[in-house]
Length: 272
Image (cartoon, rainbow, N blue to C red; front, side, top):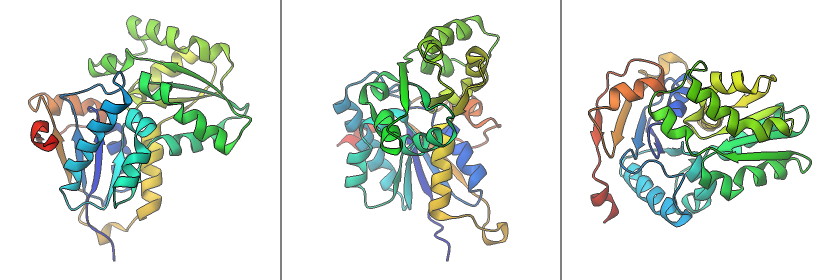
């Protein structure tokens, strides 16, 4: 019998909604509870200790529901704190690092893989460890891109946007100089910049979307079910700030109109 409990998903902000979109595509029967810590975004420029503290609070909130798994749709948390969360949680915990590394190792032809991510994700070396565990010959060129998350949050996504183009040209330069043929977009905000990244890379580099790979891994874990066996997935959203602006901002990440209202979470209460 199908486990009808929802899947919990969290991110430091709304970027994890790109993973939710992929989850709904891969698992249309599943109910999803999403928490975006919009009051404390971004996590990527914080210390590992602070990231772990915030991630534990995010997990505590989601575990207050009768969920069957948690997708950590945050590259920063997946890179720096996933091991602790897995050890402390009696449910499957799916991050974005391992699935993305696996995909990159499968599609690279030259063994030269590029990585862009937050400062904390790059500092952790998590993607490099996962890639080299799969294939020791893979060469990784990584670049922290601290300005991309606020750029996406501001809706600056177009390849024609001069600011977007110039910033990506600067960030991608060392990757392109290294001759990478595959680029891991190591933050769930970045897939919204995929067209711009491809335009700047200009060398046919394949892009890896960690949220999409995490969704694929989750669907393999729980399987798919014929539509007759489900009533259709229900989405429920929670944020820690700016409920009023949720629908408009979420539409960018989900790539559809958002009729659902977000509910406000008081993190001071969760932290006690």
